[in-house]
Image (cartoon, rainbow, N blue to C red; front, top):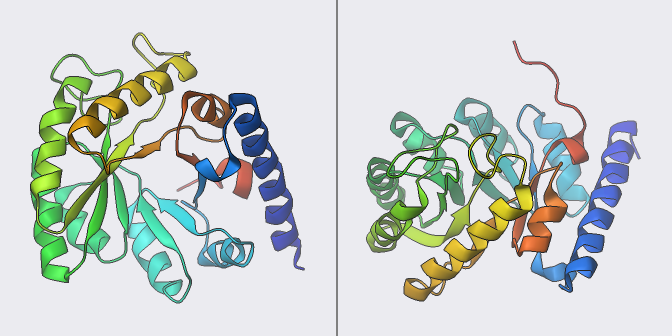
Length: 239
């Protein structure tokens, strides 16, 4: 085993134990929580190691990094999640490799994703990114739709050709009433998920929690956690 593979394997074991312990504490089965490894800034060789270690879900947040990496790893049995803010001029490229886009937050993006999914003959899963720091009717500091906009946007996705409404995603906000209150933020997301599922029962995914707060996300009921640093180490500086 290479040094890098051993390092990642050891980190994975620690993260796995954290998730398992959080599930036990919450009275949940381990199989209820899917680990998505965020591979941004890391090379395709790390993605290959993750696949060898049994990881099946990976995430990227920048198309210019993700597209070549996904192409280099196209032979692997992976589900690719796009989790960053997405500009419409990048949609055609992203639809080429992403199985799910977790950052859907505005009607124009829904229209662009639908157009390119149909053109590519693909079905793309969509999570609505919820901004718990948004002012009413606005968007969050890191993108996302305000809670009161979920119903309308969800209906748009559900009706759009080539798209599938899979659920909700959030990032614990740094400002507003939920700043420093990750579990409360994730519990709010779960309530919003319950509301969404009344109209769209199949939209069961709840993506929340990262390296620092995955336990709070599991306690709140998240179905997916997005972990990068705790698995792959401190990211190299960009630039």
